[in-house]
Image 1 (cartoon, rainbow, N blue to C red):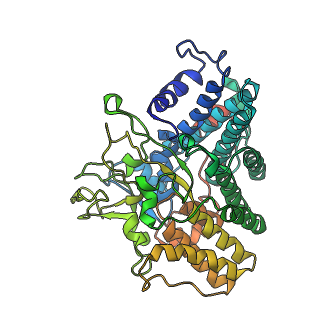
Image 2 (image 1 turned 45 degrees about the vertical axis):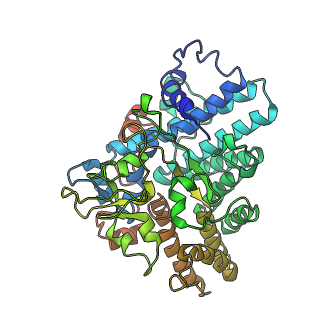
Image 3 (image 1 turned 135 degrees about the vertical axis):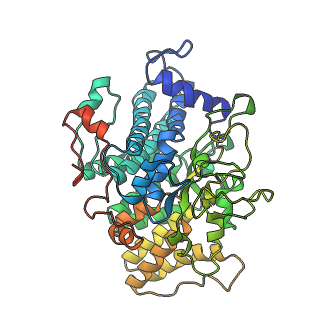
Length: 490
């Protein structure tokens, strides 16, 4: 498996504190690193490792995705983390620390990727491995930029290591320039990466061609380039590298990690009990049951609106939401009422079983791109391209898997009118991908963020403003006016 425990220690501690800050790591320094194939591998793994960090997948991440949308409320106790409540209610400003953390985390991914991309080609090593590792880093850089551009819009485009003060003189580039950089990186990655099945078991979880195609499809959908999105989705489907798991719920359990439906996920491994502490990822902890059993902090509560959005009998709701009194997927533990939490419920997709160490030693992989997502993107693109029959094929594959052997629920969709089918695809994306940090980005690219936020009572949402997050005030201050704020936040 990718990033075993010892490598986690190197990535989480050594690379962040010593390697990137140019301080000694044993006998290694910045100047004598990037000498061997092992160095190339370690530098690439350090990019993956940053994606498991607090800044990339902690409270800021769920705040800027699920909680921002109609899928989730802040959760936890009423007075816990008021800055998250500001995000939930659209009362935030550029000083909100969660925006600063998110910006910092994903630009740190970019910085690590830049170091690897520039230096790995100079290493005397197997050419195929070298090119593949550079391809992985370009994919990861593209992923980080794709997240950031959807949140913040125009961005500094940085593609090489910079000196300290150089970071503070980088102006924001237009959104299309960011898109162009993302596309260029993904096309390079696509040329260099193997298919998922071509990786040995020891490298399971590394970015493959399907992951690059998947992000290219998402980029094309954002740009409303539906023919290109159709092409990339069908390339994934026809590659025969992926398939839907028989049981929907298995996607979010250990049995589904890097399984047939997984196109890309961020790997995490709990550290051994002897060294446990701040470890693999905080993603599971921050959303875990708060109380009895004490699995976490209870943030990211599935909203009332989400719960009522499912069709009658849809089993995906039970696989998404943990209720008081429910027996957890381990079959042993029952959730007890916590009177401090109002409307108590939790995100089941972030649940993990018992593991060594503390809550923040979370071993759950973070699912980024599933095959079901691609099937629904294919359906959406095909419908926009006036191919309803083909769109229905992929939409109904997702519904068929969801209903399982119960033929009395989730009947096949048969409408072919473009507008009506569009609504059915939009609804299916919501319930299939609920609480997987996709909903906010969908609402924005559909141009529906304002109407949906108003409909669920988020009356502070201002059209033309809140579709983008504010550039963190700290970043503006550090650049002394070189970087400008998003509209209506000044």
